[in-house]
Image 1 (tube, helix red, strand yellow):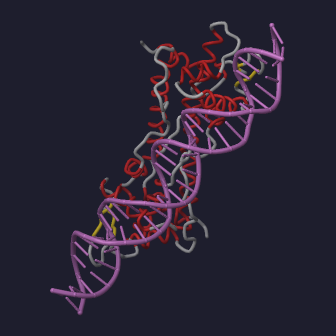
Image 2 (image 1 turned 45 degrees about the vertical axis):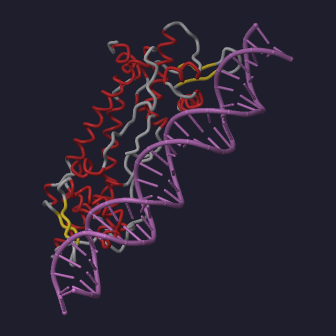
Image 3 (image 1 turned 180 degrees about the vertical axis):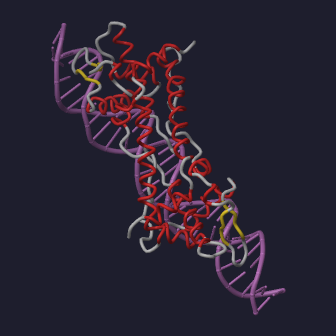
Length: 144
Length: 144
DNA sequence: GCCTGTTGCAACCTTTACTGTTACGACTGC
DNA sequence: GCAGTCGTAACAGTAAAGGTTGCAACAGGC
């Protein structure tokens, strides 16, 4: 499907910041998170910027700058993160408008649209059931 | 998410062939389907080729060649189509392996993996509930 | 045996999105 | 003023989807 890793990386970043704060630190830097996620700090800053616009994190500038959670991990669900970083739908319609003169071409889009909406709704429901605190808990429960 | 239209186009093609056969025709050509879907015949042939490998359609060559259903629309679900044309998962992991020395880097992939597997399972369940006969019925029910 | 229409398939191009990278201004505490 | 970090633009690299062309393979009709 040409899936992307945006939700994964965003969850990674939030879990990292949350754990770091539990360890008594004030703010986390994009550099630190990027090292953990094995990517570039700019990638992290871009994603966290979207999470900031969604009200999930805050950033501080200047010396001692960095990122902190805007809410408790317990109150953040994967759906919040998903909506912040994934704009589009899971399934796409035709690129070019199908032939409206054809019965199938005329009716296929409304038919598929309503099916897709139902699926997206269940996906959202599943994502809403998982908090970032759950994610961090699972992360820490992984045997090494 | 950079969603694609493969499932949509494949469902379109199957509905088209199914309706055409109900009207008494033996086989449908990629040219006809492409006109209805407003795309290129080769795109249709590529998709139908994958559906043929999955045992959903059959093709005939030579004069009077074309495509026909291998099974009744009633016995085909969107899950069959999805599995035939969508190889990958909905959500991707990190491109590069996260830092195994970091607690989060070490545990994040198993944690997200099990969440993602649950979501994919519910998506499959939803797709399995819809037959292509349902789709065609919805298509024909669309007011013009 | 040739002609015709269609599939099968390879090759290539364009577009789009994601990801990675570099660069540099803006900000703020010291 | 200095240092460290964010904010953001700009661009390159990569990958997948979709579109297009071309042509061999096939099979039925003449």
